[in-house]
Length: 101
Picture 1 (spheres, rainbow, N blue to C red):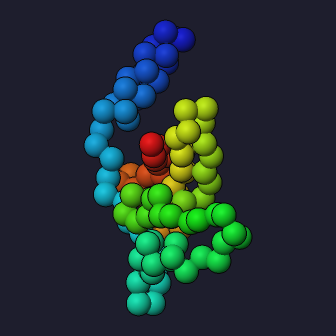
Picture 2 (picture 1 turned 30 degrees about the vertical axis):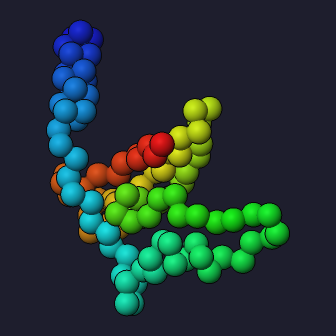
């Protein structure tokens, strides 16, 4: 029985990894749309000797809830699409992690 459960779990895991990721749905409604990333970076007030540049912006990253960097300098961003109760049980909408180099 344990072998059968393990096989079922591994099959489900492989199928989840090979299934195409559904198109993300951005549920945030911004009046007039978001400000372009380069414009937002240009308006930042920075201390002398510092500068702000746009590294990533929509549509590369949408609805981020957490981020971190690794030893290789990559930015890992967790995106949340299923927080809303209306989308939670929809199998075509999933959260994801985006890795930016």
